[in-house]
Length: 147
Length: 117
Image 1 (cartoon, each protein chain N blue to C red):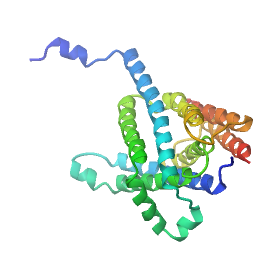
Image 2 (image 1 turned 45 degrees about the horizontal axis):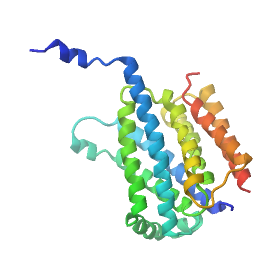
Image 3 (image 1 turned 90 degrees about the horizontal axis):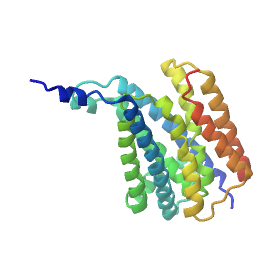
Image 4 (image 1 turned 30 degrees about the vertical axis):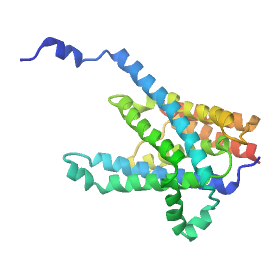
């Protein structure tokens, strides 16, 4: 026998669901930005200095680099947060269109910039960088529009 | 302080590889049905995940040096590749919004590089 209350519970309020998705994706941008700071700090600890040409000439460098990566705590935390993020995003996107969420996702660029300035050494902005980031945020935001 | 060009190139290369990862993940998702055994046999997914991992290796090599305020926005160029591959491989049409967004992203990335010089 099915009870009517169960059926009601499976038909969620459309607006409540939209708000839930919005909040989830918004949290994801904050977590994702924080993860980027950890990844940056972790890789800085590795102290690697390679160029693309060097890596393509000697692919063994990738293996050596990865050995450093898997033993680094900050990178572990950073990518752990990334994993949580991916899971939350999948939850938020369930049954919803990704395209409408691009303007929120684009906020990640803003958070990473602000966090970098406060937390990381040697970071600074100038007119061109700030304008550039603003253009990127606008560009990513409009990608999902229907026309 | 200036962010080395070699770091910028590594991050851009990483986002380029990552965009192929997205293509393979999408192919994998299209072939995704049935049991866990079939999921593990889904080579598209495996290749997609491998490319993602490889792209993050290049990203990490890139951000090891230089400033995140310059390097992180470079990742957005990955959207450009994704839009192009979506058109080529999945026949997803270009829209005015996509072209407009694409131009704004390219202009933004160019401005940041200019601001780094």
